[in-house]
Image (tube, one colour):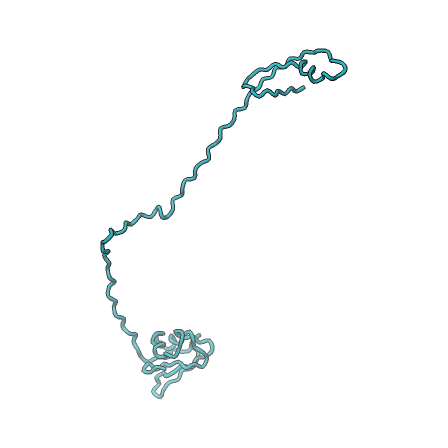
Length: 175
């Protein structure tokens, strides 16, 4: 038989004696025959469970950022004139040497035919499928910048050449 106590102020390690006969007499008052009074003594020891103390929530610590790691450079005082150092004078660039083109032979990217004058000086080159301006400049041993100056009609820095275009190889004229 289990006995429950509705008494709320139970102290730790308190000992309570309950008489079962009194409880049975109240509960069975409406029955026909009253049971023989029996006295049962029960000893109940109640031990209160301690309430755990709450664990404090840790506060997040800020992580160092790059801005915190970089030393600060103070601003110049107001009204002061910051000192500036000009760049050194530019050294004049010598123009690329101009000279006659020389055919080093057909290569991938420059497989077209070249035309020469009666003295054997190269005059022009006709673009064929698969040619590119840089390979043409290499084939005739002419810097790309010089070949562009000799051919101002070629647009897109030599990127825009087409089949049957004629490229000037005569360094004394422009086309």
